[in-house]
Length: 401
Image (spheres, rainbow, N blue to C red):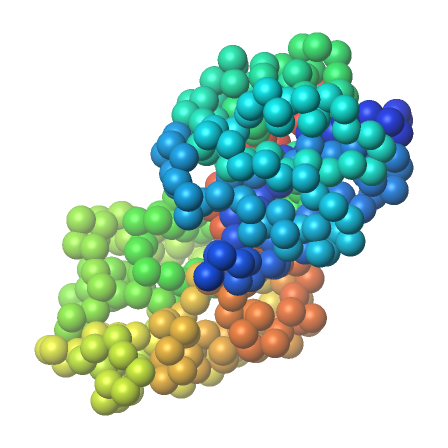
């Protein structure tokens, strides 16, 4: 896959660039609680500013569903972005996304100027991929850059209709450095990964990752499954899982996945032991039990030490590793050992390692393992859909054809 990048933008100086970012960050007490996504955008922003561009930055935040909601305003993001860029970022709260005042500010924006628009999802046209809304955005700028990998799987106006419209108007479009790195790293997993190629999947619901499991079974040498989603596999084979999370309506699907893995000679490894407790609380009494013998009244909240040991043994021989999803409720220290153990094994494996998904990245950060991964993907849903081989609207429109 070849996409247009910043290297192909010849004339940037003195021009206004629409930069679509993923600034969907957590807010607490009116301030940004975690600025990882803002920092991830800095290389693209700094490069464009260094080349003399003026920037009109846009992002979504939360799910306001086409209405103005005070808790989803981007004011706190503008403050943090200004601090990180070390320059003023103009932000004017509006009753939607655009206003005559905002449009006038963008029209007079000079080189080095930065404007942050209000939350794109305050306008229903964003999620509707509305061309009329895209036209209003296009009128603000001369060029378009998308660096919001976390949103490229959405057919939304700022991701799909806007760049298509810019191309119609003969205006340059490109991927930013973050999006470029994401495509390069994930393409390496799709095309010719070094083998053995091991995928580690976790998280709560198997239904969220069935398509990913189906795709990975066709590509990997081993698939390690932990987290609550493992209990649907275990229960489908008759295991006792107590009160653990389960999706009985997916039994047939997981049996089919196991059968396909067996047919292809792919190792599909499930936990052999889990840490169980009667409640998902810090001080709940806990015990380690066989994964298919969880007592009644108990729920599995982490994979156990034998499972960590076996997962680590498989990972030690890997040459490529993909990780998406925690092995348990790692946010609570008593149930964090499984995720910590597997993350540490991946980081120390010597393989080409990619982690994706918000929870996985939070775990990597919490355990101080950032330097052990070759790529930390900023888009959980987008990365999974990419690896499933789907066409993602925000990437397809930037492809060189």
